[in-house]
Image (cartoon, rainbow, N blue to C red; front, side, top):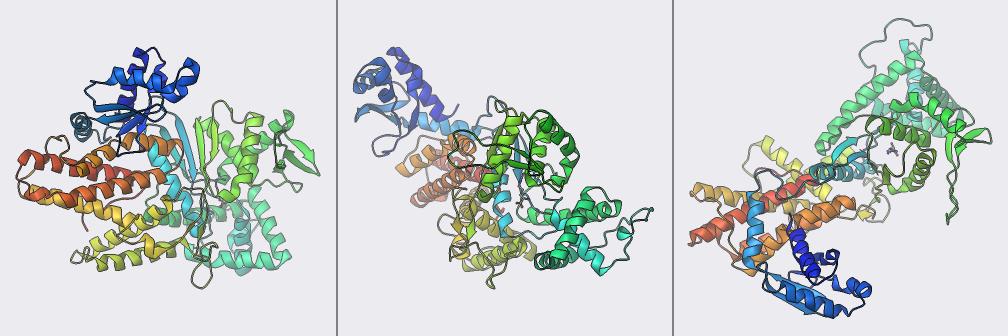
Length: 591
Ligand code: ARG
């Protein structure tokens, strides 16, 4: 059990012994660390139901707690706060347990009731290059997925590719223009289509902007692209064969980029995977009266009486018989309920799609495609990455910032920064390159995750990549340096030993922070907000650095104390490594 839960149950016992409900016993880390370590505020809400002065209740609880071995001081403060000062032995015993937890869980319990959690993140569109707008979904989604899994939930991440849209018809049309004699365009062709793709990813990257540009400029091109899209969606064999190639070629490229970002999907499903489900779904929605005709289209009204702003019906089937984004997302819920039976589907998608998800979720609940009691549909949205001008971040020339170029840029910067502090200077080039990649990715991801996901932030590579301040590189460096102390100690024949009661305030603060790990993880997951992990890691690293500055571990003459400090160093490095891993950030062996 975590420190906080243990303390809460001790205080709950004291409430009960005085005749009150134990639920008032919950403790929190004290707001006033000069006065207390933890505090319980339960006497205040207890006052009303028991019709008593909160101070009086608190006093009775304080009496019951005094003399308990966990505390050196229990006192009443203000209108009825109970201040708790923990004994050094009690604190150390918890840190020891954490250090000796051989499971890799660092004393964090698995959840009691695991849920099936499906995280929908990534959302790249096949055959279009990834750009900066595709950065946050994988970064935030990966962290939420890892956290969910670590806590013990049955968790799957699905990339949910946009692989069925207009861009396909646009590319097909442009290809046909360039090379009309390809077999894919011969309606009478009955043989096997070539196994080899007629286009590479570079071709697609060259073709797509031209194709989409022509469609924007010329309605005739647009009409042709729409027709090709419709033909594809109706199963025209040559187009399906071409489309397969586009998807396969794109996937290889997507995987390459996501690998660099250390993002890994369990499911590579996409919009195309649910198309078979749509006709029956539509039929059922019509039969059950959830879908209605409107101007030749089929729509699902989703407005509710208490809406402050009007919310339009979800477009199910357009008057030209085509189906769109909302229909596909609805069918995807249907498929997920059928295949994974999730307790929660977390959509880590741009905040500009809030309206879309509101419509989709309402339609899903209303129609019973998802049972509101059983499945939590959540849009865990995020804000925009801006430039210093406060507008979405662009290249220096004002163009769209491709994700690949962005990654290259941060890795370049990492090299520069490493040179500034002489890091990895004489390592083999491959190792240096890998370290630079890790430092660059840590800079990029941490800078993104440290902000609450719903806010926008300004892309400032100089700040993100610094080895000082609230940054990924600072944290990597903290871990690497701690590990190097442990290595040096090992070379001198010194090993970590039993954690002793803290001998200094600086040391005690590290203990206190370490013991906040379980609740930090829980809270970050419950709020789907990895920024809490960033704060925790940064605060822990800072406290540890202070401790490290104040004590000379390797030259300490008290051997038991030295062994305890080495134990604390190892535990801190392990906890930081775990926390970074849950953020999707990996730590180099050395630097
Ligand atoms: N492909 C979409 C886009 O680029 C994002 C998909 C997000 N996930 C979803 N289930 N709608 O906007």
